[in-house]
Length: 504
Image (cartoon, rainbow, N blue to C red):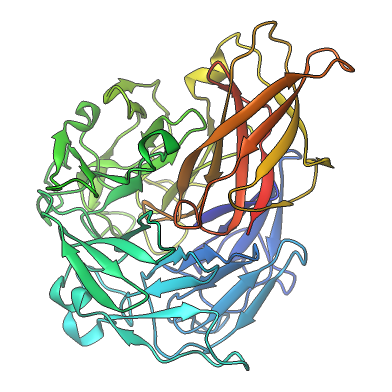
């Protein structure tokens, strides 16, 4: 699992014999990776985070919940809440606090700054089953003044979509009423759910082929723009038609415009590469890179022992593909040499690169196999990094230097950036991006919104410096409150470093 705060990568791991140690000498479950310094620091945790979920509240604090049974070293994590505040720099845990156990839940930031915790099972499994299913949801922070969790609320849709109802796909659908309208997909069935009233609003058409765990695909809300009134379009890619280790993965994606008069899936060939367990990352220019995963099998640990392993996912998909949502075209990128299978991750970094890590299709640290426990990390350079187009540098936002700061901004307000660029004829565009929480091919809360530029003025007092005025998104259904990054691009090339902001 991976997420990014203040130019730092935060990771959580399986409970196993990792060589990195906590302060008490136990194997680390979490670590802080400094992108600039290339250093790794263990973060202390006491509860089992295996197969959990996370999301950011509007105040910028990460909420993390769920996990597995624990062991003699770590407490059970299924009912634990964990908080990471970058201003504090360490985890706070509330072990056993929540009303019910959750393994493989989904989380999402909401329009009021809270987060929803959806579904899961009460214990580890391949296919979910009724006796361990948790077809409920909870919202944090609770309504109580003393922090006592609210009662879980039933979600019949999760019961109806057994056994493929773990790590369901969820996205907030833009609207003009500031309502928490959720797009959800479980077991091929997508719905529109009004979280505020607890009611099913609409059943969308089913998508062909299984896309949720363990025949895992990936989903995203495509970039949103004011020019089409932030029309919400969902994209779902990859997956697996059969729960069978020899079956070829799915080479298809579906796009659906959610506010169309008659919503329907429009399918394509996913760039011609079958892929189960893919990751998706929306880039600053609005294109999407799909990477990682396998071309055969499904998500899960290998069978057998080290001497005679039986891999349930194999044939790594080494080549990323770059997708252009406007032209609806794919381009195959240069391959990696590292197999990124079960438990791989990818996330955008503030410099416009993509950080890639993970892969451990077995229940413990194992080396010397075809698909060993993978500790190597990689950086994927999108094509815009490899051009000669000058990249802008954001100096400050509303007068505050971006270095080391998370700068507060508001909705539907003008925000002023001072930007330098050596291009004699720059052409600026802007975007605000929530990088999300990444695990098991799900990028929970990832969001891209094109930001309107109200004006660009040359700063006569400084060579190559510009004053750019942006108009922030109009309401929190477009992008939820919380920590985001503002990117300024010049002719498609992103800034040297994005500005971290707290939108609220």
